[in-house]
Image (cartoon, rainbow, N blue to C red; front, side):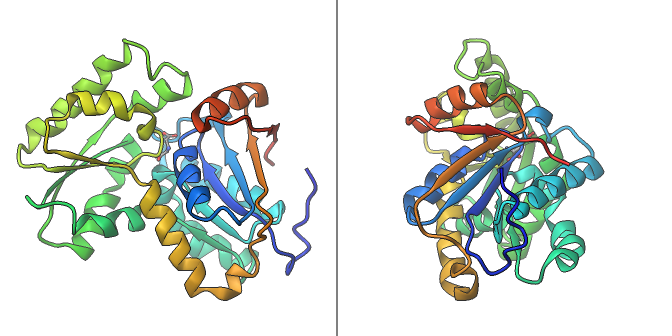
Length: 282
Ligand code: DGL
């Protein structure tokens, strides 16, 4: 792929990054709401999952992926990964971006998700299902506390759920055991929960099974629509960035793993054939 990083004022695609397939659940909603933009998706499938890795490793991997997307002409990158948003976003914004370019931006997905829940929960008891990294970072309780101090948050780490998706086992009967176990754990710790945030972008791929084990009346929230609406709002408020986002409706998908495997899995999920390129990161 051509390195066009030198073309500082040439409009480029919006970069969407995840450790693997999960970010496709965010990409799908974004491109539905904002079809006119060009998108470049990067899945770091070769190194997934990120959720069980240390802060330093998630930061380093995410930084490499963001730099790759910048090198391909992106000016704006969405970390469509909660683990990366929780563990790497702030360091990238504060340490890396000032050294790379004053024009480039990286946005996360935890804040836009949290902003929606104040109007959704009535009991003011919210559950978060996410990776071990996201739960241990405490990012959801901290962000929710800032906006809605009356909401009680309980988190449950689900370390097997991302591997189930990445190995395409998420629809198999064996997946039910791990899904039920974590839903039950969460609800046994706070029976007043009326809203569960799926705080990992892979989890919407498990939503049919998750809903089977969630009692009626408890809402299960995915993030895609909130992130897409927030991006639309961001671009409207930042016309200088909007002009740097190309609008020819192009989509390019890249993976650090096998392109044929990504193509098969992603095409099935997106219900359309996509072309995929294998990339190597520095
Ligand atoms: N999809 C990601 C998230 O939202 C990461 C999963 C992982 O690699 O563990 O957290």
